[in-house]
Amino acid sequence: MIKFGTGGWRALIGEEFTKDNVRILSQAVANMIISEQAEEYEFVIGYDRRFLSDKAAKWMSEVLAGNGIKVIFIEKIAPTPLVMFTVQMQQSKFGAAITASHNPADYNGIKIFTEGGKDATETVTEKIEEFIEEVDKKDIKSMEFNLGIEKGRIIKSDPMNTYIDSIISMIDIDAIRKKHLKILLDPMFGVSKTSLQTVLITARCDVDIINDRHDTLFGGRLPSPSLETLQRLRSTVMESGYDLGIGTDGDADRLGIIDSNGEFIHPNSILVLLYYYLLKYKGLKGCAVRNLTTTHLLDKIADKFGEKCYEVPVGFKYICSKMEEQDAIIGGESSGGLSIKGHIKGKDGIFAASLLVEMISVTGKSLTELLQELYIEFGYCYMAENAFVFQEEIKDRLQKLLFQEKKLPEFTYDVEKVSYMDGVKVYFTNGGWISARFSGTEPLLRIFAEMESELLAKEVSDDMRNFLSL
Image (tube, rainbow, N blue to C red; front, side, top):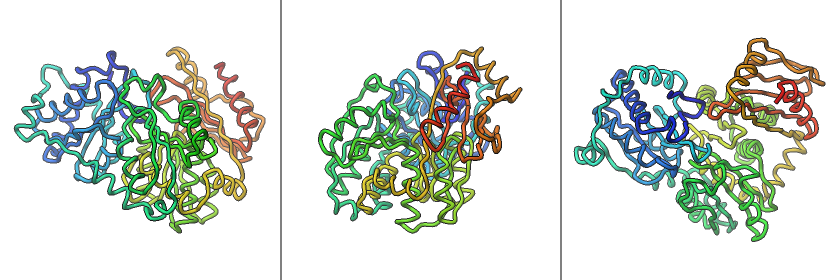
């Protein structure tokens, strides 16, 4: 029952996310580490604000300690990027964050990280799944948490200051200080408040915060920053005259932005703006990486500056691997996660938000103004996104139709090529595209389409939806 998706193992609390399953997974991880003779390396564990996260972090620590593996236990709630940073800083071989990221409140999960603070690859997670099959509950080794501390097998740690200092060292703090920006932060009842607030106040920003209490139901909203979920942030930014509104998801590895005029800045736009800023305003050189459901406007910017943009499957582990391989300066996805060269090898909504604040400070332009600058130079792209819940029998029908029979709608536009790298993606000769793929974290079929206008994007999306009878 324990299967890893694109962002770790995620499951419904009380059904699959249980103490027994956390302990089984932990024993499998311990067995894998021992099989690789890596037990002398410290294992980093952090947790977010979700229901059972703190307890599950202790359950995992107890099993690892019982197997003779030393645990670095981050003793306060931790953004996922902080856990990845700590794995990197401690030169650990492995680490884990107890989180289900942006999933609904009735989910929890575990993300596994490897050397350098990277998301575990499929090779690693498949190996863990193989070890899970071999675990017998009666053979699980465990050491009570306080005893583990007493014996020095569990070491409590608070790396927050080091993490914050690292971010501050990478941004132009003086440029931000000169602007005296007024910023509203929405952690979405998650874990970004302390770190992001500290960075912004250090830069002399005037910072206010909404939705920061501990609420395991996330205020009844999905803890994923979008136009729908950031309505309170949007209205308050407009009403009170903030320069920027920043929303971060439940574990702070993604972000959503509201501009000073109340405009929701789509994650695609955040990614292309930052790449454009790094190339044009900071004078950096380097390629970009995106997943297959992320805007092709990134490709146009790369081409203009003599660079290349690489396409990979959905899952940030693929983005990070390709970034390392090609020495890219940025990588990202349309869901709001991005990574910048020189920081951690994974998503960090806190660092990305800090760099955005630097960008509007250095350029003296709002995000909307910078976007218009981009559109004038590179043209406009509009993305339509749809997600459809399905029953298992419907999934079987769709898989057969799309991936076995490889049937597609009769589109109005000429098709350049079709890719089955991850789901199916159709590339049109006019530069537009449409993709359909099953989510790796939820029972959803996602359809993305990008065209030169909203009308055309909706048109090709409807063609796919009608063809699939959704």
